[in-house]
Length: 324
Ligand code: SAM
Ligand code: SF4
Image (cartoon, rainbow, N blue to C red; front, side):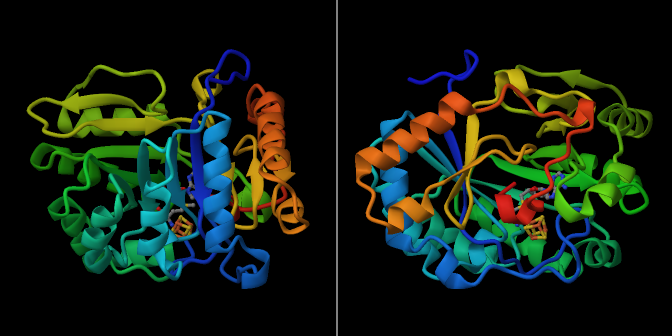
């Protein structure tokens, strides 16, 4: 048990790589340069940090990136994390381009569930938003995840003004036929593309209105208060619909997470630049106890919340470099 402003910080989001097979317009610049391999945590270093993280109270892990499925030896790494005593659940956030083949081995290795990014069902607009993505391949990845028993399946759509605000209704409609949780995300500003992102925000209230106008009322369903998306259901819907409104309605009071970047920095708040370097001491021979103390310090120093309302924009990294 640990605490930061009364919050129990126990959920670690681990970026396995800053690389990606997409270049989504809301995530990174088109000419993104990736970090050379030697500056990233190696498998054994990562496993050691996960083990130490359990000593300060982390018990849930989400693998993200960049695109986690482009990391070499992913299945073996997941199996290694699953064997760390104290880790109760491993989840992954992915663009699903490589999931058709990987879903089953990942599930066998210990992965429990996936969040899959899908911003539109229209092939052309999907390609334009992701600058590389093929919607049919992503769709096959979603179905493979379902077949592999990765459950529940959550779908994420970042809604970007001028790109996909008209696609929200079709995405919401998926929950009528499928037992999937569809979540719509407000664009968050980060790093070198913050100005574009701030200009592209579609408020969650507008998204909800668009869905209700087309498909009828959204009824709230039970919510644990920690999941950032309060869930709703369409009449007769099998899955739920949620809105992640970090910009217009922050949920910092319920924040239970921290992030470990692929280059070994503990990021205390997604939308602030405060970080603790773990890679340098780790490679300089720090003991488990030294690293545990650094992580414990991170929990104590975790800021109360982000500062978007005060126009504080985290500038040091874009989303793919942090592990969104
Ligand atoms: N590549 C994987 C994917 O896209 O699912 C995992 C990494 S991605 C950075 C994690 C999540 O962050 C995705 O759901 C993505 O849509 C979201 N994301 C990226 N940039 C964002 C931004 N500026 N604001 C809000 N969400 C963003
Ligand atoms: Fe890649 Fe995910 Fe960022 Fe898109 S959102 S560029 S898929 S890391």
